Image (cartoon, rainbow, N blue to C red; front, side, top):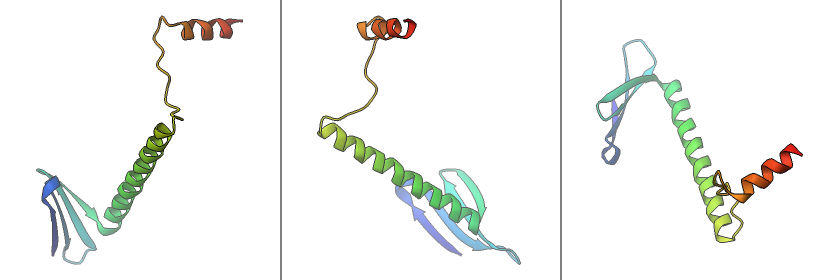
Length: 93
């Protein structure tokens, strides 16, 4: 049995082997625990890493755009603003 503790996140990952079965991974986060087969856990963990990397990359790209004055976020338009009225008028024409 091999146990990793991530105390900062109250998470424990335990690698063990049940009799005559594949290795099992027990993932405990707080008081909740889930059991995975080793391959299933590996897929889950890699998906988390890929999603986190993608999120961080998008965040860094947005910071770069903001620092260059090229922010392409949604423009703030209130329901009664002139921008809404002109876009509605052009759509109906």
